[in-house]
Length: 382
Ligand SMILES: Cc1cc2nc3c(=O)[nH]c(=O)nc-3n(C[C@H](O)[C@H](O)[C@H](O)COP(=O)(O)O)c2cc1C
Image 1: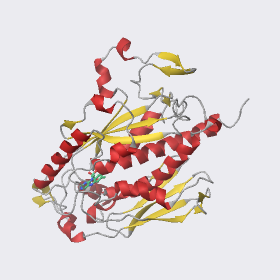
Image 2 (image 1 turned 90 degrees about the horizontal axis):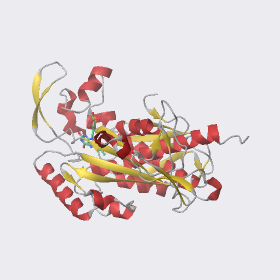
Image 3 (image 1 turned 90 degrees about the vertical axis):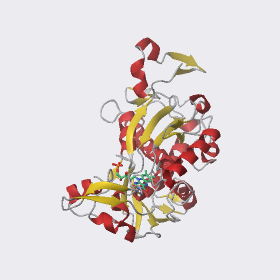
Image 4 (image 1 turned 45 degrees about the vertical axis):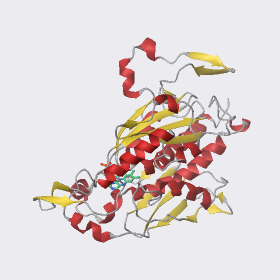
């Protein structure tokens, strides 16, 4: 199922950049979950184009329509279908790209695989596809927050879950190009307000200002830059994940690398752990407030493919936007070498808008594993 994701809480996204609209069908969502269009809209507003002067100026309101699966403000347990209509597409900017492949975009590979593609606005390879993921992620986030709060649902660990009012997912930018937020400025779990305080979604104000200038400078040169998003999840109960193929970090890695423009994923101490010895790297166990906890968290909250109740954290690397407004060497569909001048309205840096998308994919992975855990291990008590 190439356009579907998840085993229990399954999403299927559909739609192209310049088609009639984009959307998602969610199957397997538990019934009776209270959800409103406004809650879904709040997440879509964080993703939508035209939200600031450092993202694409394409003007899309991205108003969500709930077509099915929600009745009187609660999910019914039947498929939820969500639609966002496309409004502001200017396909003429893409006429040259019908025959010429954009360097480092999906044009050549789609042509090689399918032999026929909707080239307008990048068609299905456009990040407009992620509208459906963010809409579904809003429902997954709501489910996780409610399912993990309160004593009735307290399982093992998720140290802060009950106290903090349920599981919480927070993504933010730690690096744009070579400008990085100082590590000691990001020790505490940032609030949503701190992340949303600037258009670049880096919760360290001074660094955020420099990042914004770097993005603007790249845009004025018709160029682009990439960056790194860090995502943290607190209040995760121990026990989510699987021991072998569907390890939690494997599913998170797949979710992140399924996003357009991603090129790297690392969880916990990641690649830096290769510089340490076991004696330096191990997360020692201790008992804290009556619970088994780890003193450090280099594992990033996952051991043996299963959450251990500590904070989950990982980094995702995004490349510089492929479409740049400069003349570049390329090849056309007839196999002739040629040149292409990038046109259209593009993100000079995709990373700020990717923040809510990373959160959405994280929620989708966790809700799926939460349901698996309860189906297998929570059904019978012998
Ligand atoms: C939020 C977001 C916005 C993006 N905007 C653009 C864009 O304006 N122009 C562009 O060429 N690519 C953009 N991309 C990336 C392309 O969709 C992506 O590079 C393309 O599908 C090829 O896939 P790949 O880079 O993963 O190989 C964006 C990606 C994200 C996550």
